[in-house]
Image (cartoon, rainbow, N blue to C red):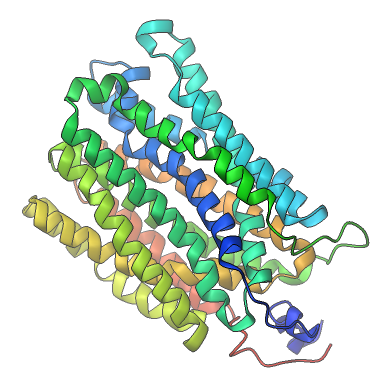
Amino acid sequence: MRRGDTHIAATADIEAGRSEPALHPRHVAAVTIGNALEFYDFLTFAFFAVYIGRSFFPSTDPSSTLLNTLATFGAGFLTRPLGAIVIGSMGDRIGRRPALLVSFGLMGAAIVGLALTPSYEAIGVAAPILVIFWRLVQGFALGGEVGPSTAFLIEAAPLRSRGFYVSLQSASQQLAVLASGLIGTALAASLSEQQLQDWGWRVAMLLGAVIVPVGLVIRRNLPETHSKTGGPRPPIAPHVRVIVLGLLMLAYATIGTYVINYMATYALTTLHLPPTISFGVIIVQGVTAIAFIVGAGALSDRIGRKPVMLIGGTVLLFSILPAFWVMTQWPGVYVFYACVAALVALQGITAAPVIVLITEQLPAGIRSGVVAIVYAFAISIFGGSAQYIVALIQKLSGDPLAPAYYWTAALAVGLTAMSMIRESAPRLVPRVAD
């Protein structure tokens, strides 16, 4: 392969004479809202980890209960690579739309199953077994979600607005965070601790299931952006560098995301803040992230993916540890919210362009499957273990700054990968001839 050909994947649609399409709002909504619905229940499990743990993993040691619950949360990541291989590759073989329908339908079944599983007190050891099963189904579905949905947005969006449109996918995940926060805060404010324990968290999960039929309908009406069903697939070998660097960047991004998602539990167990305050931080997280993720995506269309990531990441690198130190020294509501908002904003700026940068550099014939697999392995290895590792380190060391140390180390690795990967924004990548 000649030197200039490394840019071909990023500009393949330009070379093919692809016109600037008009991406209809309902098409964007079908992908991004569906993605938000799938992540809603997945994240709700993390936010209600303390209450779910008491229902299915009773113990006289609260730390052990929490660790068992977080381990179950992590179990959902074990099947993500399998879902990525099966459903993500389906998106390349038969089209993006069928893959998106399969992933969404499976998630709907898992939401209902998990929410209706009886407690340990009612059915004994069968309860945690069922919870783990539904978590595995959820992980399989989500493993196959990201590749086809990102590929669809890359292929349907105007060439010079890809960063903005793909950022809407990440923003939709934050809409799920925001919805979970609003519901969690409302439940915490209106229910007693025992009611939250007995059935409040189940209500939060079932509210996601109510929207599942709507999600299936709107996804059935998506146009297809890739319907190739025959012929040889593009080789993967020329894209190994992108895959490896993408894995490292996504490892940082997912560790940062799940440390942030851990903040509700951190507020309850480490800072000893009341439930209304700890769930309120989810609202702060959602609103802040949506604004900065979309802004970073749009900015990356104008100045490039790398400058946005590197500037935001450098500032974040020197902000994580001080922010956690301030939270532990002055564990009040305003300090807590302000520190979380600052970290979320910087995380959004740094991580938003990552997925579009990776996806742009892959040809359409392998785009859905490769993105799904790389994302799934990054999240399975690093995201699925992040909260458990943080909680375990904190328990063993007694250091409340454990999340900051782990996140900072991951970011250092991610920044190194960001500096090594090529720019992919169509505005900045020169046209090349094969």
